[in-house]
Image (cartoon, rainbow, N blue to C red; front, side, top):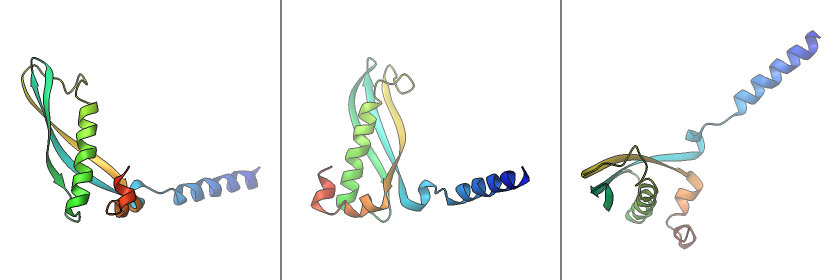
Amino acid sequence: MNKWLITLIFVCIGTLAYAQSYRKDSLQIKVYTVINYQGSHPQKIDVTKVFCDYCNEEQIEVIKKRAWSMTYDQRYAPENRIEEGERRLALFIRIAKKDFSKLNNEEGRSR
């Protein structure tokens, strides 16, 4: 009985030690967006700021398009909807390092 318990403990510890977090194999980029509402209907979506010091212009444009699309999907969410004015959102976009390096290639842009 004790051998099985010790073996189980070592297997569990080994599994936990092998688990990877997203930080090892992906990048997290913060983006600010704004939704303008009139009469509780969204009128315009703008991407105001992309926080990426190591991105070139092409990569920033791809990230902006992804952030705009994420904001578009959330425009009618109850927590984001307001009667009049603008709703500011902070989004975090995670991109795998392999995919991020492909953003300059033609195949990476077509996704």
